[in-house]
Image: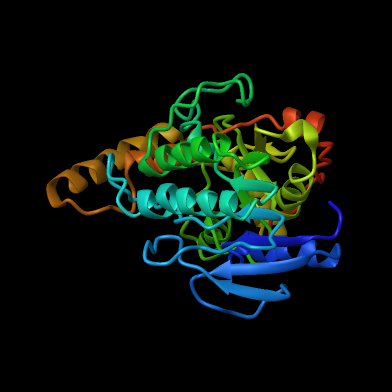
Length: 316
């Protein structure tokens, strides 16, 4: 991508800052954007609330938009409740796309999620990784809204648009589920789980921002959708053991069987039904540990020429 003026929505987030830094180092004039102005690796900042319908978004002079702004996926979301997600993810994307069309923006790369495809085969053993050819059947309000936003982008009049669907992202500065899992292991609140051979894909933030940069300029990528997943797909137990090694903790030779966890989780399900409150252990939570979410990155390698790092560490 030759030097140009680019806009990154959601610039102050974990992925956004990493992308802005990469683009700035590559010589691009980077405009960060978000609801509140802040300092970061960009040349200028544009205060932008995608949910505000009272003002018109102006993107004059912008050649490429990287649309990362979103509402974070909540584990405790209620089925069928799209409130919050629809306003930010769907209508916010619609407003941004309309502004990009008015300003004759050339390229837009949209950061979606594999949740737009569904929850995978999380409660059955996966024999093969899921890829872009699989039917998109999202099961959560977040996933439904992400899929609708993808459609808005792909059907736009912007000359070059690409949708990226990353799996769980990790890397320096991340404070998500992987970091929380490591802390729970460190303080003894995360028991070792017997290996049930599930596989869950992850991707390093550097690989994801590399995919963004390549997608913006690849002719082959235009109006395509790509799963962005690292080469490593570990079982929950393998990840548990890897995190203990990184934290210099002794290995554990035993594990709690999954059937035992599911049995205990039934009590959590009952309490949720009786109280209407989210319990620390329920069947949904246990299946996030026992289930698979394994994805193929072959299309991104073939079309974008993306070379994924061979990762052995998950904490920086």
